[in-house]
Length: 220
Image (cartoon, rainbow, N blue to C red; front, side, top):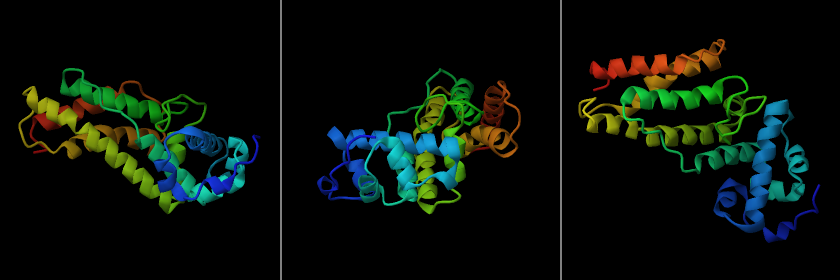
């Protein structure tokens, strides 16, 4: 564990204050804490996640964690807000079906056992994405942050529909949100709710079905 932090250097508190600090020691502390929360959540689950455990794993003085994040809800919310604060954009493949397939592939990798984690883009033996989703049912702050995360992802993904209109694949006026939800929903249903065995063809199959529905005018 590193030397205790000087809490008097941190007059602000909570995830909003943490997000405003973008450089120096403060940024390093946030990175250490966010990584520790994710690791502990995957390893031990929500019930074992405490401020003290996070502080110990992160090598940060517990007073600093309490002042900046207050509680487990604040920690979880900041993990999700940190994940949302990136430059991610959906791939531009040249066709609607391929764009949706690429999007679905990212969801698939995040949800399948041992897949890439949505919050940090890395592979792990566990699954941080599903652990965060489960935690959102136990914490109102995490639930709010998760909603913000998905709202941001769907808003950025709307350009998939816009590009399809520009290419002449879809008519003007398509409901991008409905298209995207229809394309991605089978992955959450199969991998998260039904816990079906991973199916590498699922991302393409779901994308093709959504593309066919869009072409038939279902989302206009």
